[in-house]
Amino acid sequence: MRKRIDVQLLQIGMYVAELDRPWLGTPFLFQGFEIRSQDEIEELRRFCKTVFINVPDETVNAPRGAKPSARPAPRPVLSDAEQRIERDVLKVINQPRTEPVYNDVTTLEQEIGEIKAAHAEARALVFTAYEDARLGRILDINGARRAVQTMVESVLRNPDALTCFTLLKKKDEYTALHSLRVSILALTFGRHLGLDTEQLQILGMGALLHDIGKVKVPIEILNKPGRLDAREYAIMRTHVPHGVEILSNTPGIPAAAMEVARCHHERYNGSGYIQGLQGEDIGFFGMIGGIVDCYDAITSDRTYHAGIPSHAALKKMYEWRNRDFHPNLVEQFIQCIGIYPIGSVVELNTGEIGVVVTMNRVRRLKPRVTLVLRANCTPLPAPLTIDLMHHKTTDGRACEIERVLETGTYGIDPVRYLPVQPSTTMPPLHTLRSG
Image (cartoon, rainbow, N blue to C red; front, side, top):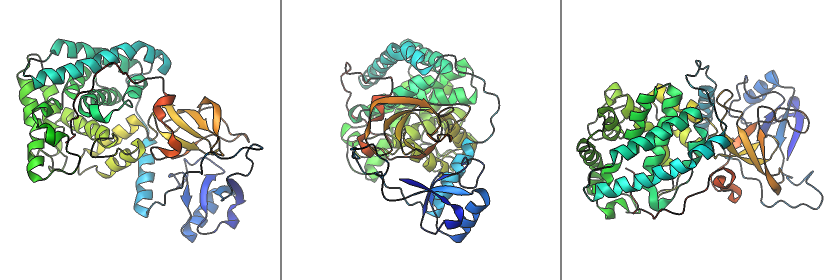
C-alpha cells in the first residue's frame, strides 16, 4: 500500500511511489524510484512537502472479506544508467511539437468498424504474396496497392485502430504478419512525420513486402530455435538481395519502396548489411524501415526469442540511437508510438492495474486506460475505461500512470481489452525467422 509522509521523514531505501505534485516539471521523470542517496532526499525536499511511499501491507483498506488474487508485481531496481535512459525518454515524449499535419477525425471504436474487414483482406493478401513469391509467380501488385491505400486512409483518420491489430501476433505466422505489422507501423510513423498520401502509399508498399526474400531462405534456417552459426547467418542475410530481386522483377514497384527492402538491415554507423551503408546514405525510407522492423521484431515472440514490452523496446532503441538508427528519427518514433503504447499493461498511482487502449496525441502521458484490477489485485466486476486527461483519484488528485508492467504480469492478456479479435480463418504460413 501507499502511505503519505512528510519529506522530512524520508530515509535512504524508501520507495517513492507518488509526489504531492505532478511528476512533470520535477527532476524525477522516471515516476517512482528507490531513494539511494541523501542528495535525492534533499532534491525531494526542494520540490515537495509530502510524498507517497510504498509500505509492505498491501491488504490494508481492501474491501471487507476481499483477498488479493496476486501479490503486487515487484518493482525492478534500476541502475543509474537505466534511470538516466528512463528520464531521457520521458523528456523526448515531452518535447514541444510543431502543429501536426493530420488530426484524428474518427474515434478508435468508429475506425475499428471501418477497417476490420480491410485488415482481414490485407492479411490474406500478404499470405498470398509470400506463397506466390515462394512458387516464383508474379506478385499481385494491384491488390497490394489497394490494400495499402485502404490502410493509408485509415491511418490518416485515426492510426490507433490499425495499431490495435498489430498486437495480434502468432509465432507460427511470424514473418507474414510481421510484414503487415511493419507496414502499419511505417504508415503510422509516416503520418506522424507529415508525409503526404503518395509518400505514405510508397512507404507502406515497401514495408509490406520488405521481407519477401525470406521465401528463398531454407526452412531449417528460418525455423532454427537457437542461435545461427556464421554460415547460417550468412545465408539468412541473403533474404535482402533475394527480396530486392523479387521486387525488381515485379512490374509497378516504385524504386523508393524497394529502398525499404534493400536497406531495412543497414545501420546508422555502417555496421548493418548488405551494403554497409552509413548515415544519410541509407535513405529516408530505408531508415524508417529499419526502425519499425526492429521495433516489431524485438517486441514479438518467436520460436527462438521472447518479445519484450513496447516500453522497454523504446528505451533500448533510444540507447541504440547514433549507433543503429538516426537519432532524430528514433526520437520522433518514440513520440509517435508514445512511452505508453497501446496494449501496455500499466499500474496507476491509485494502485489499480489497466491496459492502455487509446493514445493521446496532445498529452502523451494521459492515454485512455481500461482498468482490470483493483489496487488490492482483485479483479473488477467488469473492465472500466477511463480517460487520464480527466480522471481523478478518490481524494481529487490527478490520476497518472506510475509504471509499465512486464508482459504476463497478473496473467493479463492486453488483446482481450482491445476492440479487436484475432482471425481464425486463415491457415498458418510456415514460420519465418526475423533477421
